[in-house]
Length: 168
Image 1 (cartoon, rainbow, N blue to C red):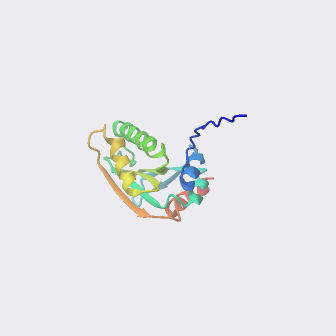
Image 2 (cartoon, rainbow, N blue to C red):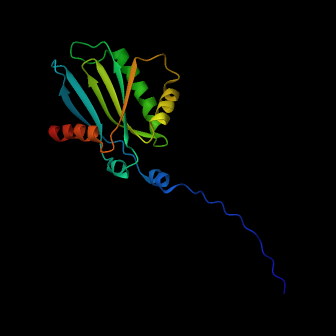
Image 3 (cartoon, rainbow, N blue to C red):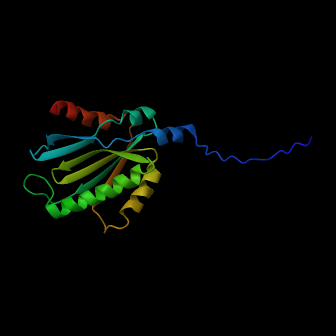
């Protein structure tokens, strides 16, 4: 009796456990809104992302990146319509680019007092910078400043989240 052995190829996608964990984490798009004001009494609208405890607890997003856009404001500190619309387009481009592969997640947006601030928590600041340039390539030069710092405890997010509790 003759036996024929056949070789069967099986391709298994192997990912490092920490990346695999991120693949299965679901990023909510649930946001809350809170109000604050500047020292000069101008309103600041805060939009904060909710339901992201899995990302906080993962320990993978240890650095915070903040993107600032200073603008000419109306009397109440809010941007004029045309600039506000451009900010929304930029925001959507940033959010999509950063969150596509969960390199970074947008956790907060502050608008008021002549400035909009987008807050992200990222796994890697140099990669964040590269992705930022790619995301904004199609826009004309924008008046943005960028600040990063290590924030493994998510202190900024936790401070902002307290604003939600104050609004309820």
